[in-house]
Image (cartoon, rainbow, N blue to C red; front, top):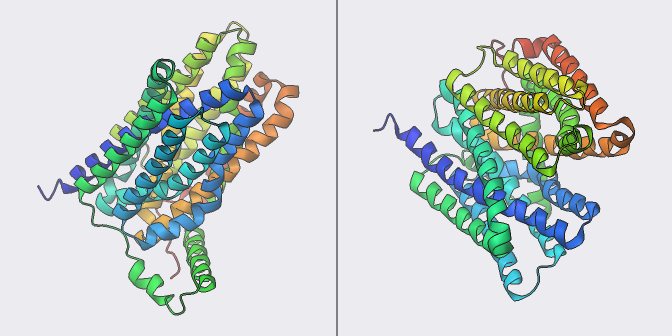
Length: 423
């Protein structure tokens, strides 16, 4: 039983995570529809998106410090209960009056603060309980949990919203967060918090606000230095930043490709999104069963090239190429877990456990800034260029990025280099 204890722990936590992602996806879709139907304003939807990403970008780096200081169980439970409390307050407002849009946007902001702590804690958990040789396959399982919850949540939201409205969705989200909390408690996690007795104690001294802020900044900088010391990981991080810059407009342009270029309906646009998500689940399953190439950097590069090739072909399709577009959407989805999963596993394996929270927090914050920058650039030029040319150009850029990534020596030798972080 002791040999399988790590599997039982992860199964409990991931089971709760699947429920939490499912109910969060349901509520997220409900919020989007509520804003759309209440305002019919693209700017309000953009403001809601900003509220959702800003805390991850602003607090992600510092949230990682807290993750490293505290036991993982406390961070996961605290984040889930915080998100549940935010949803409960929204439910209370919704029960007393017509829900104002500004309340939804504020709720999205505070829910994202909870996610800024939950995400690096969740990513830090796996290497603390599982053997290193399983990390890449487990990253595939984690991707499947996230993708599966999103797909089911989107489908269930389409049924619940017209029948019972937003209040029922909020109640489900609160229940999902509570069930995720129970799952973490049942798992009996006893990992994390290794840093608390070290750096935190060393920084104890004065307990004023300024000294606490300085300690927080010192620990954040220490995490950045650790990541920078691993040359291959650091190079992959910035290649990922470029990839996200190029990728982010593509997801926003999917409906335009389907409706404007292929002359489809909103149902056709939804089908393309679902096919992409099904591809992600298929890719996650394949990654979990095979682990990808022995050199995980080669897996990342191959995934970048596959995504780029599929995007390029999609951009070159004629107006009658909707079926082929679905096939390319599936390939894009398949490549996604092979891009992100090995990178997660590499960081989990190579970065010392006491720095994992900060490293994942920094990684998430940097990627969060890439998203709005990419979307802002596309909003300026996509209308003039057109969705098809944007797809083709983005695909070509990804193919070039794949070549550039593999040309970096520290990335090619990431599995064999004896990189060590400075103390």
